[in-house]
Length: 241
Image (cartoon, rainbow, N blue to C red; front, side):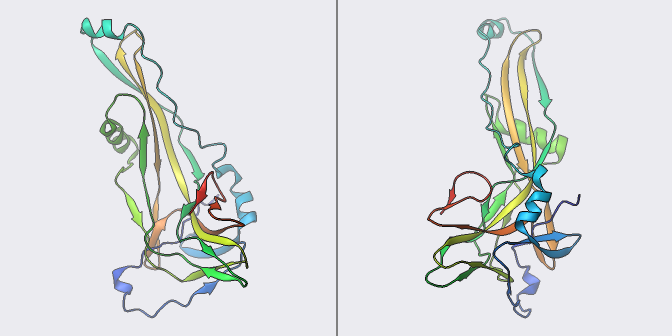
């Protein structure tokens, strides 16, 4: 299966004086996908069936809480035993992440409205941890072992090359579902042969792609529509305001 590339949001500075892009009107059930450097418009429902193994429901789990430290921890420290750190990595997971807003929520009045990608939105690689180990221990480890940069961020700017329709009386916004690579596991710290502290970590990272002077991350762009405000996420939990 080909992983998809998400249409970019940032116009390169070399395109400032280019002719304006003529917006292409998409259907309510369309999504934007970039495959092998070509933009494709696909049916959202059919595509999500194809990508069912990459949907987040079975993959997104809350960050585990650290295991309680053993009652001997204080004693072990006093004995000045030789402390060790052992890293345990879970198998990497790849999935389409929850909705990331790429436009404001728009309400259609008595007639249909349109919405497109707008500026001011961003997505970043992230690292979450529990336990007493410093965050930079995990960011350095992930960088060395997997090449993950914790500081990589992608920003959106105005791009009206595609528009989506919002049915009359409905609320809607453009969203991205980035193809996400998750590294997780824990680091055990303490004396050899004794129970120590369990420091858990989760890292979500993305891969950037470029097409026609535009750049964003792997994944899809689509419309999310609801009957009320705020709009319930189409993939994931929570709402978009």
